[in-house]
Length: 171
Image (cartoon, rainbow, N blue to C red; front, top):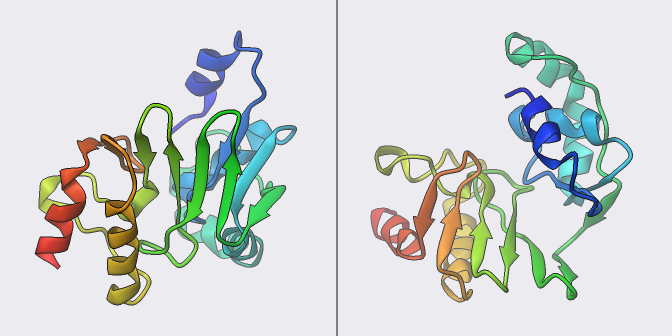
């Protein structure tokens, strides 16, 4: 995806921009270069994996580059959780699709963005897992304890809270 439509959409909003890298895969981090002067948040493992795997990622996925793909590392990392109390935003370590996966919970609007921890169709609702299945199940059980109505996957599929139980039943 080209980042230009996103930049156009937010250009008149005067709030500070915070970019969140839900995990280290190319389709979740290549836009960082367009926001180099902003806060870019990730799990510490994501930053490490980006730094060590950048050249290999470029070589394997260069056919997808639209515009520039420049290594711009996150400048705010965390281990377990970051909380922005004024905005009621909780960013949590939620390994599953990848070992560095994180999720973002908007407590005010009761919306969770789970990155690629939820697939984008009912046929592929369980994502490819790069962690032990038991770790992913623990993440799903943690989601069940959270207060949200809407679940958004990393590729913008909008679901409700029942999706977590559906995934657990398929595992």
